[in-house]
Amino acid sequence: MKNSLVKNYVIGSVLGICILFSACKKNKTTPDPEPQVSQNTKQTPTTNRVDLTNDSLFLYAKEVYFWNESLPTYDAFEPRQYSATGGTNLEKYEANLFNIVKASKSPDYLTNSTDPKYSYIFDKADKNPTASIPGIMLSVDLEGNGNDVGLRFGYFGPSNSDYDIFVTAVYPNSPAAKAGFKRGDEITSVNGVTYGTNFNGEIDKIQSAIEGATVTLAGKKGNVSFTKTLNKSVYKSSPIYKDTVFTASSKKIGYLAYARFSNKENSESALTTVFNNFAAKGVTDLIVDLRYNGGGYISTAQHLINLIAPTGTSGVMFTEHFNATMQNKKATILKNQPAVNDDGQAVGTYFDDDYTVSGNTTTFQKTGNLTGVKNVVFIVEQYTASASELVINSLKPHMTVKLVGETSYGKPVGFFPITLENKYDVYFSMFETKNSAGGGGYYTGMVPDVKGYEFASGDVMYDFGNPKDDCTAEAINILAPGIAVTSQAKVATTADRTKSTRLQALGGKSSGEFVGMIENRK
Image 1 (spheres, rainbow, N blue to C red):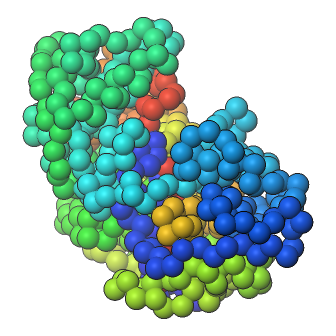
Image 2 (spheres, rainbow, N blue to C red):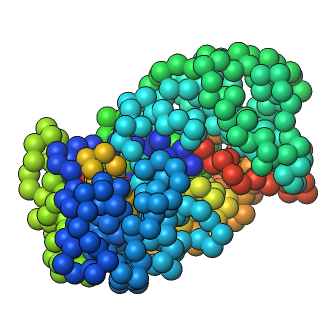
Image 3 (cartoon, one colour):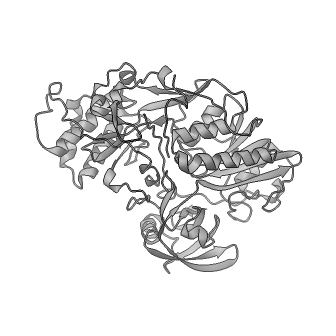
């Protein structure tokens, strides 16, 4: 039986894929083997490294991919055809991986997409402790490291030819945080250039500008204009955007805006402090704001679940379901993937592990001083994924759980890294998670109980923790219907809000956070 005392886990959720990479500490010591050639007639002997790696991508998928039974044969798929495609070796492998996913016809493949929804591959040379993955997205990694100006942007408007840029989050301790930027600031120009009329043609230019060493941003805080210059720098960031307590008549409602499920050192103490403060202030109900939270470590997700769960909650928290090949110990290709401990020492291979459901069952281990909460509302949106959804799903059988916002990303699957060439880490979707009632399968996302919007009355975007924020106000109304609320922020009632004019988030690179779920098997 696997529980929090036996194994450590990692979950994750990019669009800022880079948030996660430095959290993946599987330092394989040997390159992948040359695939066996006896079973596939078109898999002829070769010394071409790219052909061998493309073979490996397919052969690993045939044994460890969650939907492996739906994949064609080697001869039908011909993985080496992607060795002849243009671009770098990584781009060749990405093309191969995408077509493996496409061939599976699984939820990992989205029609008209050019990337898998869940699986991915990256060059470990691009991983560094300051969260810099060139050309991807400003972000903070799962160790809390940032190397940028510290702003998360959203692009909102009625169409691609009519949109506005807003700050949707500011990473704590970043240059932007120190300069006074807040969620809800509107950006009117970047380095003196005004955007807003051609989203698809402008988004890369905007991103390139704000990823530079220095960027000058002009904008508005409400009706007050500003111009500020920010210099990119390395910083350590907390995963907590905001925590506060609302008073609604006799109720004390704890509010937490949580950015990412970062590692133990970055998250667990910070979360414990927040929840112990909630307990000291007599919190009876909770709002957990997971907007933009695409995931992180499963061990941290477990910790948050155990902080939220009422005293006395026991038994199964969630289970992991690998494919039949892995459960029946037939994924022999994993003998070529060394497992290492925290000291980097080899402790066998991934093949040695137990992939049965009973061997991958996580149980509740209540922690923290907050003991009696029975009602929790989660604020979610389209990039709320993985660890965030795991927390929600795991708590549903044990307390009253409600959702406010938009339909979530939909990622009930996870993985651990497969290393090829001792250079590339590949993340095939490997297992599906289910709660104690057997609930899971939310591949199309979790649908909110109440619709919530990024903007409130007058198209104003409020900061995290302000009860005038539309989603926060809806969450409060679920927990304390019709009751005026006081907090450190402004006073608001449900009558103060209107949904008569609403801006919609555009697609593209507007998410700003990693989307993924990774397990670190020890």
